[in-house]
Image (tube, rainbow, N blue to C red; front, side, top):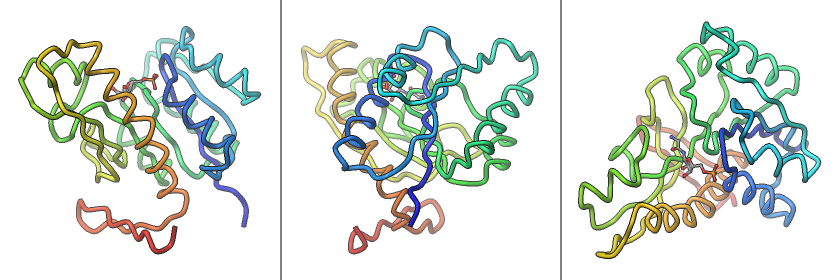
Length: 206
Ligand code: GAR
């Protein structure tokens, strides 16, 4: 059977991307990565992909005054490369209902909070300031509603008295790297079912 084609979208540092690429190299994730796309020129992740010989594209949303035009340009790439799955690995641009409906295949997103708590931006610090005792990260399917699609997996970390914005973000990030590859493998293998909002994973098929 041919490998699923997984496009990875980023906007910055690219540590989740790097971790996925490492796991793919080790044979722990089985897929083809036709390209990495960034909406920001200064995304360090672009360099990480290039060093691994992966095709990169920069489509800067600022060059498109109309959001639909930006998204159409991205969709054209996904069609050209026959992408099966999109992974949003620190992609900081919200994709509209138009994008989600037109792509019409799985899109997954890693978010640095235990959704539905702290959707949106700056989630780790907002969790810290709120005073939660446990924080974490979520991988979910992307739907038309921001940070609200069915949850594939979550990882939890404790919050300590001496935590800072940096320390909590780093501890969450370590769990993100584990969670994202696990969630992507589930989606690649197709061994799940979505009923209502709930994602049921059939581990027998692993
Ligand atoms: C990660 O913490 C990811 O969860 C977050 O951006 C960071 C990207 O780091 N994503 C979001 O906040 C999406 N709303 P990375 O570029 O090193 O992977």
